[in-house]
Length: 165
Image 1: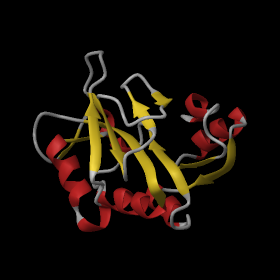
Image 2: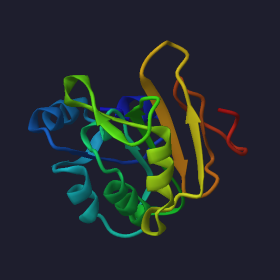
Image 3: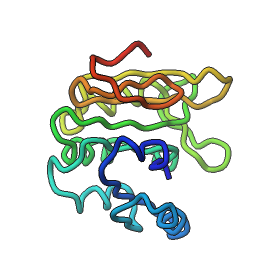
């Protein structure tokens, strides 16, 4: 459903969601060239190597305790210079906890560790905290310096290097 925020900047959207209802809602927007009901890792496994410039998982990683499989498949599917952006709910401790609403919260140390595993290594990343008081933190990972700037209130295209978090 994040396609509306990027509609003017992206040529083609492919949507993957476990919920048939969310896929139907996405279909109604008219933004998606392709939609698939699948779990994230399985949906990414069906994609060719180096076939995406941007992978966005907005409010999706909260349903996974282990982020490494998604990071590994995302790295494979992204082109060099591609960007993986995702949100997580976080907590002040380490590791992963199951929080309210059966949503996982990932400690910052866990996210850093998962991203440093050899098969899912993302060398550059930013963390930003939304201005409003919330338990959510946005994590932006880049395979190489992107020409996409994240400013916590949304994405905007940039012709230069990423701006400050």
